Image (tube, rainbow, N blue to C red; front, side, top):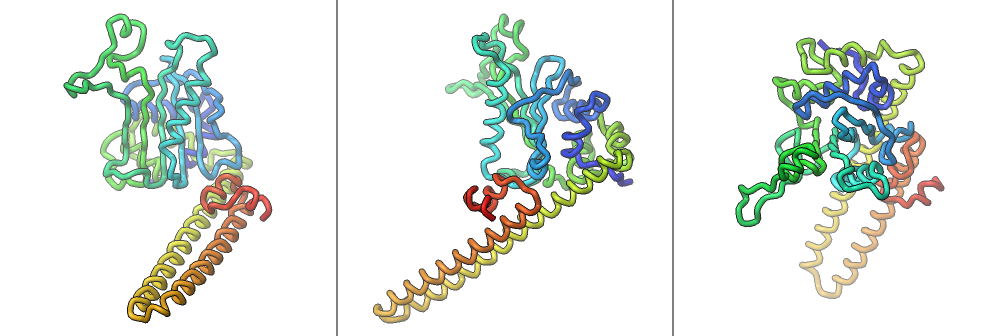
Length: 324
């Protein structure tokens, strides 16, 4: 049975910050980390993106659990080549924000970076990845550096790497299986927006009841529909630009290949003329591509997308986009 449920990233911005809905997010985090987790509070961070015009790209939240650990949860819809770097930056920024000048180093918080991405990030066969720091012996790889007895009494963990940040990457679009585990049930919901009637993973029964579109106020329902339409349009613009750019590149490549083939069979005197012709054709193609990018940027700007996002996908300068 399919449900008319609110997208998880939109719910993160509007609904899941409400204490009465903590149970939904706690269920997701507990299922992912494999332990019971209870949220104490939501925190504000310079890395958080809560502005309305940022809804196209990402939805961040930063929470603290009862053990004092910090968890960054981010949803990213659009492809970003440097996304791994941004994960690293977000963790580093959060660490620096939540330690006061002059504090001892043991005040550094344990941080989990949880990334829900709707694009092909890296290369791999799985759809959920976990990364953490492990200190292995250089001469004996089976020798993992552990905390001392005193360190274990004071800090959480057994191995030295347990103090360091941990990362989770959920490539939800790569999930194409029948949900057999609680985590699979959550991944299926994140991908499709639907919760099967038989799903029992922690937090999903509550999500089924509390994240219904028809339970929203009229104002929130209108905002939700508007945001989803804007997101759909934005994806369409980006996809169209990608296909047009790829087609143009293939066309240009074939033309240059034919020209080079003809040049090999002609006299040396024609080579210079053909090279000039190729240069002119390439310049014309680049000019046409630039016009396409400007037109694409104009549509994206009319849709209300942030200038920085437009610049990322069109490679146009910020000043040039502002002038459109």
